[in-house]
Length: 134
Image 1: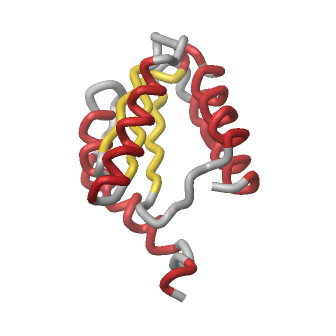
Image 2 (image 1 turned 90 degrees about the horizontal axis):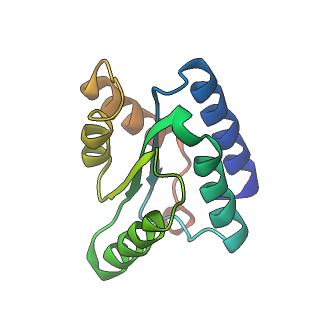
């Protein structure tokens, strides 16, 4: 993620939290081809989540991918979650968007899990292919 996409993500989350205070959720999907964020963006992401306090009910972080590196990345993120000071927002880490959606539905109202899963796949289809596949 770069500063541009992060700014869009931050603004969109703020709008959702403003419209649904105390009932908003956030599903963050990191594809297997994504590069690790800089320390600056990692810190800004943490601040973004903590800044909403109890107004943000749940955050599902999805780190996609198979194998050792993906597992290490999920483990590192899960360890960072334990250090979050905002204990009013439930945060968990998953390997697939489907797992994240189903967990998030336990914390916020999601009218249709199937439609949300389909929306994730639609958004994924609109992204340019990773550089390694161009």
